[in-house]
Every structure is written in C-alpha cells, then in structure tokens.
Length: 207
Image (cartoon, rainbow, N blue to C red; front, side):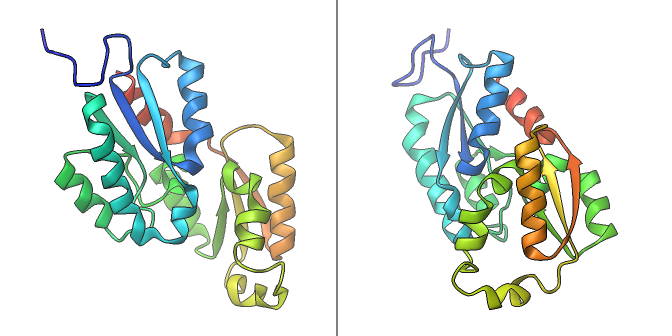
C-alpha cells in the first residue's frame, strides 16, 4: 500500500488542476456536474497574467512546487497562452502535463474546428464565455478604449469578424458578445462549442 503524500488524506482529492483564472467557472462546472469534487482540486492563477504571458511559466512553476507535497498528481490547465514554448519547458522540467493547444480558443472549439474557423477568416477576433462576460473590463477598459476611442482602428482595423465560442447557451452572454462585435465594428458569429477538449482534460484529471 502506497503511503499518502505529506499533507494529504485518504478522503481528499489526489489530483490538483492548476488553471488560468479564466477557466475557473468552467472547470468547477464540469467537476460539479460529474460529481468529481472528491477527485479533483482546483487552484487558479490570476487571469490578468495573460497581459504578461512571459510571467506565466514561473508563476505555474511556483504553484506546482508549493502544491506538490499535498497531491499525488498535478495537471496544468493552461495552453501555451503566448509563452512561446517557455511554459512547456517549465512543465518538462517539473514533470507535469498540460492541456494541449496554443490557446483556449483552440481547445474549446477543438483543434480541427478552430483550424477551419481560422482558415476561413484569419482576421477573426474570438470571445469565450469568460471574455464575453468581462468584455468591458478586459478589452474596452483594459486596452484604454474607454479613454482613447480613436485607438479602435489601430487595434482592430485588420479584423473582419468576431466569433463567439460559446461554452453555454446563455442569451445574456450572447447579447453581450453581439454588442461587443458592434462596439468593435465587426461582423458577428456564434459557434456553440461546449467545453470541448477541456471536458476531456478534466475527466482525465478525475480518473
């Protein structure tokens, strides 16, 4: 019989998922819907790290090392997320796996569907449920468009459409995503993805 890792008990989750804060709601929904509360624990890093992706790898490393004594297994729910392969280097050094893909748009839509969307129109701006919910804070205010609206063509002049990759059927979020497209002057499309490859990833964590 294998001894429990220090700080762990027989009735506590054996797998920790370290995730981007932008995925917290979706991962918790998957855990709750499938009754995996006793199998999977979740720790999230701030979603605002996406504004400084070069900081993601070391933040993930720190969380891995901090958490390792309490868990038998750790998985990371980050795609590459603009780290240019640096996150993969850290995870290889730490012996930890992550969800596949270059970004959350790809694993939500699945890689094959996202490739079709991208090839059909490279000038596409994507929203997820999280981004639709926080569009004003993250995009409008985060990029200074509330103070300097004249910057809109500089930021979005090369985009043609906005595609909302919807994890849920939420009329309010769809309305927010449509309003975001109008705010940016882009054509609007909605693609119902569900949780995509994230669902498979969390299911693997629960085994």
